[in-house]
Length: 259
Image (tube, rainbow, N blue to C red):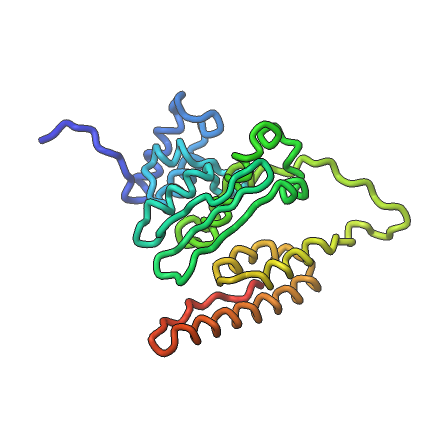
């Protein structure tokens, strides 16, 4: 019988709880997990869903506000490791002003391209952060590659974010405008306008799916209008795909209209 140490992978919830209890006592554990058996268990379970071993999960995954996060290059690596699903993920442009990534899913007629710009980072209040000041090109690449991976491979990394994406917004609140009643109810039209443009420009259902989370955060009136446009654009893309593929085509997988 071999004495070699193998990767320890829990097979049941009881085994996972036992391992989490043991690891939570380790002084080599990240500070945020020490003594927190339930947090260790959640991290291990989140990693197991991504095909990671327990210690890989602890090294690579952070849970921020209940959401698993992982460095953007590792998100891309997870996708590229699934060659039966991912044909490629590649950077096509990278400057200190913008980054563009292209990804293609196996069997899809064409790739999806997503660009993240410095102007978008400024609008999101990111540029004042230290990493964005020192390494804007790297931070732009991280945003773009994480977004394109979630859009094209939601079954692999859906709901997985780069830690920078989940950091709480520390931008000071804007002062209340004068002569505005209940200014908290006034919503800037720029987000709805941007979403309408993004929906109209979408060239695949994957690109539409990537917009769902933003649509659901709109006020009810705006959400209903963008939601209707989203559904109409989805139907247009499906009809175009069916027309091109003719009788031999496989119908596009159903995507629900965001609620």
